[in-house]
Length: 263
Image (cartoon, rainbow, N blue to C red):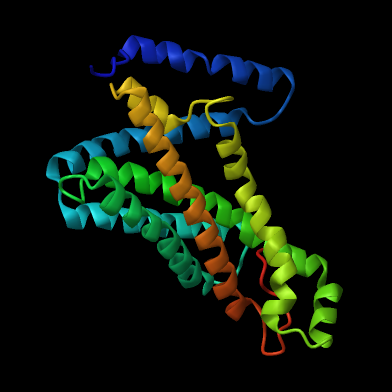
C-alpha cells in the first residue's frame, strides 16, 4: 500500500489554514505576521529543494554523496548551535563540530550499520532521514546546554571562584553547572519518551504507517530512533561542554569576559 498523494488543490486548502494564525496575530497585535510569512516561505522553499535533492540521492545511491550530506548537516547544525547559544569565539566551531560528529555519528553507525543493516549500508532512504533526526535533536539540545552552562557560571561567578579558591580543579568547579546545563537539554526528550504513544504519535512512526508499514514495525523503529536521539544528545552535550572549557577560560581558570555575543 502506497501513501496517498496530496493534490495541488488540497495543498492550497492546507495553506489556507494559515489565515487563522495570521488573523489571530493581527487581532492580538502580536507583531509576528512578517515572521510567519518568512518562516512559511522558507519552509516551503527549503523542503521543495530538499525533496528534489533527496529524490536524486535515492536514485543515485552513492556512498560519497550520502556521507557527504551527513557531514554537511553536522556542519550546518554546528553553525546554528554557535549562533543560537550566544557564543562569540570562532574557535568554538571546531569544538562543537567534534562533539556533534562523535555524538551523532556513533549512534547513527549502531542504528544503521548494526541494527537495521540495509542493502547497501549507505542506503540514502535510511541514512539521511535517521541522521537528520539525530543531528537535529542534538543541535537543539546543545544550544540549551552550552547557553545554560556558561550563563550559569557567569551569573554565579563568585560561587564558581570560591570553588577555585578552595582548591577545586576546573572540572570540579564546573561540575555543578554542567549538571544544571545537561538536565534541561535532556528534559524535552525524556518528556517525549515518557508520553510517547499516549499523548502523541511521533513523526517517524506516523510516516511509516502512512507508507504502508505494519504498526509493530513502525513502533520498533520509533523506539530505536528515540534511544539513538537520547544517546546522541547526552554524548554530544557533555563532549562539547568539556572541550569548550579549554577555550572559554583563561590560564587562571576564570571565564573570559568576551565569551558572549553582544556583551
